[in-house]
Structure formats: C-alpha cells, structure tokens
Image 1 (cartoon, rainbow, N blue to C red):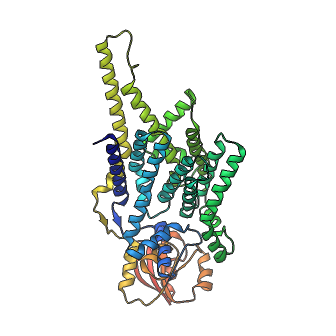
Image 2: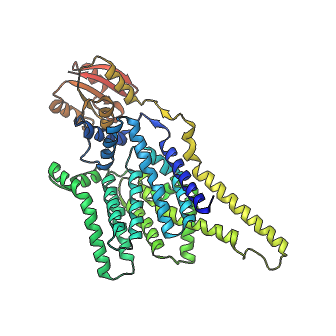
Image 3: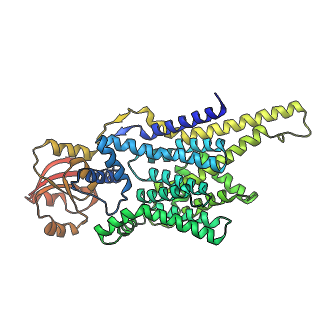
Length: 474
C-alpha cells in the first residue's frame, strides 16, 4: 500500500469510528431540547401543529429531519442524521489542517476530533451544536482556501456560514470572528473591503428566505434570533465556570496542548497568520461565553477546533524533534550511552502520549458496550404510552413542564402553563377553559397543592409516576 493510500485509509477508518461512536446507541428517549427539534420537524412534515418552538429554535436541523422523514419516518432516522452531520467536522478539520500544515497534522487533528468525548456526546444528541460546528469548520476552511478572492471557495465559505447560522443562531458570533481573519490579512484596505462585502452578500443571500419568512410570521425579521437569546438569559453559573469546566470536559491531551501553546507564546511567540487567527478565535470566543449570563458545558464546543488544530501541530513537532532530531545527545557521554538516552526519551514520549490518549478518549467508547438500540423509556414516554393505550378521548394537554416532550410522544395538543406558584390560580381561572388532561410536575412549582387538586372535582387523578401526576380535567 502506498503512503498516500495508507493515509486515506486511516482517515476513512477515523471517520467511520467517529460516526459509530456518535450513533451508538440509537434511542427512543430524548429530552426537552431534542424533542423540540423533533416536534418542529413533525409539524413541518405533517402540517399539523399541536405544539412548536419555531419562535426560538433555528430552522435548519428540523427542516433536515423533516426531509429525512419523507424517506423513513422514524425517530432513529433523526439520530442517524445528527450523527453524520456531527461527524462531518472530522472531515473538515482534516481538510483545514492539511491546508494550513500537512497531512500528518491533519490525521492527528481528525483523530482527536473523532474521539473526544464532548464531541462524541454532542454528536449523539438530536441537537444543533455538533452539526453547526461541522459547518463552521467547513466555512473557515473554504475561507482560508479562497485567499479572499471572489471564487467558488469564497462562495462555499459564505454558504456554510449561512447554514451554520440557520443551524444554530449563536454561530453568528463565530462568523464575526471569521471576519477578523479577513481584517488580519496583509492586503490593501480596498481588497479586504471588497472581499468582505462579497462574502457578506453571499451569507445574507443564504439567510434571506428564512428572514423573509420570519418577517411575515412574526412581523420582525430578527424576532427569532433575539427571542432565542433572551430565553436563556438567566445567571446559572459563576463567571469562572468555563475556566474550570475546561479541565472537566476537555480531553487531557488538549489541556496539555493548551498549556504548551501558552508556554510557547511566552517563550517564542512566532506565529503565522493562520495560527494568530486560531489563537484569536479561541480567546475571543472564550471571553464571549464567559460574559454571557447562562452557561453550559456544550457552549464551549466552538473553542475546540482551534485548540485541536494547534495541539495537533505541537504533537507533530514533538514527534519530529524527538524521533528525527540529532541533538538528543550529551557531549560527555559515549555514542553507546547517547543511543541509550535517545531510546529512553523516545519510549518515554510514546508512553506519555499513549497514557494521555487513553485518559483523553476512553470515555468516548464506553457506550459501545450497550445494545445498538436503547428502548429504555423515560417517565414521559411511559405516561404517553398510558394515554395512548387508555380510553382517553381528550386531545388537549395542560402541563407546567416538558412541553415539547409531551407533544412529541403523545401527538396531542399541548397548552403550556408558565405560571408558577400562586400565579397558577389566575391562569386556571382565565385560560383553562377547555376540558382535557392536566400533567402536573409537582417539583417544578409549589402551587397548586396536591390537596387542592384532590378537592377540586374538575381534576380526577388517572396516574402518578414519581412526582408527575396525570389528571383528567373537565
């Protein structure tokens, strides 16, 4: 096998393993955000709206799922789709690294991206984080490859940027960082301005159909983007959350790479344009998510591509210096002793990389021990199956939580109850006019009390699962 064929084969293996890790296991149980995209897809596919979150969710993932439903209308098809979309990032980071550095660095980066547990886990969700990240990596690859000239690569960069924004609204922030790459180029102002205008027009052309739809539906073309941002505006973690979360969620190999990059920056800060951009990308996005009020580990994912690329390059350099350098020797020692030292250093380095890799990636392979199809139901699924199998004629559900989950698994119309505690009674008097079902999550609100529900003849308890109570409501 030729060296080129060997590397292509290795890349294919890395990508296939990455897809399997993100796919395994297929499951029927999904949580709130996942079912929101599934429910939106069902509304698009069937045209029947029993509940949707179009006003706060980006459209692309649900559109793609609805498209898949045309060929195979099953919850597993959505899981397969998101696993493949998440795995596209492996291929694009390979192309990006190969363009910036070489094929060896590209293969290292592809392997790290493929086997990192945070990326594997996010690629397993029916969520937008992993697919959007794949599109963003593709976008910056085509942008760098275009050399900022008006060619098909610049168009593809804009296309992928627009799709990334339609996949996940916060991709706008990373797209803004991409603009810095153009400004950092050593070109004339007019050249950069013209490239930026062309790129921006292409991006707007991709976004235009959606923005026009939002204008007609909600009377303001930015309504959904603004609304999505305000929904998660609560302060849930300290400002230092991400500085500590890096050590919890990032692979040890990448943490070691981060320290190596910081050390190199102080000792010998010589970087080319692409490396300066990657470092800028990492720290500007870190500052952005640090300043946002609502913090979650999955929001850190756009930090990974620049860190993976720079770490892969440093690993390649270490291999090169240790295995091919002629400077690992001591003048006062014999040739024999110098050879022994070289062998020891090489073995120690290989062992270190091996140990770091095991600790970095072993958790990504844990779920392979499970069955391919996980049919374990959640309480909501059990409750939904009870409703479907009983002689319940109601077609409306009132609930104080898990709205998209209940809508997706029951297929019934869901009327959300946002009122909490004593505000519930006002909502009850003014909004609960139609008969139906009332699903009450007792741990989510102190009111109404279970005693009040028991004494009110309009509520009849049908089933209780843990702290979830199902009532018929007349």
